Length: 303
Image (cartoon, rainbow, N blue to C red; front, side):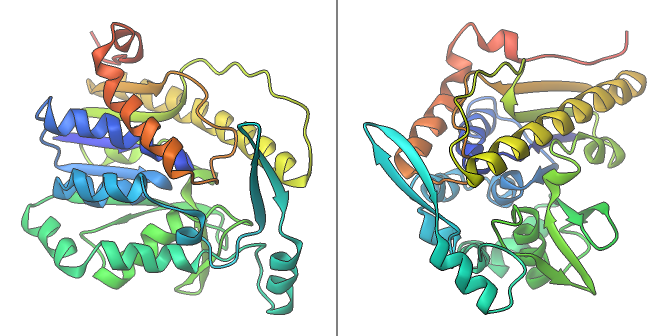
């Protein structure tokens, strides 16, 4: 069974979309299983349908207001550089309303439902495809995997949303007596679930550098501190995911192809700039048109 796995990475998901477009359209890959975390969870329903144009349009036209009902930060550009400040009014509004997070991402939940229909969901089942999204159960402090085979349409839209909510900037998903958030908090690259499901060949898109080396500028404010510390944490989780999964793959005779970003796309993956995301999508697609691509496609297979 062939599987496509896409890591978390916020707005960098546009790069993953470009890679997936090439794999599906030009390499003619036929995946039966799609596994994603966070932005990966947003991509995989459309990729399972083979509807590249619809998800590409979304990722290259999206704006902050499509994600946030209440955005906890303000964005401005100065001399071509992005400056991120705190939306004090929005955060105070959240506290007055008794909300548990700094921002509200209800708009993202509506965006998912408006663009991924119940007919789409049923068609995935008809095509005998399975999509699995990764969520973090903060109540039980466990990572959970939600399959399209096990839930209704409405429930599965909730799980996609939960998988994409980077708290405390975004909403908590309260469901079945538990509170859920972004699956990247525990499993950024959900390769292990693909292995558990019986995949024998896995294409894995990792929205991180293959070799992480950063020279970040000084931190400016609390949002910079949050972004930097979160990114540091996610890098460590990603490293663990890769090591564990490659060891498991080697003992199970499973072939894994890895596709990494080639440069630092952004240090604020919670900012959705449609112009930049259009460029990143094209970069992902063009990854295969350079000889450098060979250094980004690795294999883990027992001899």
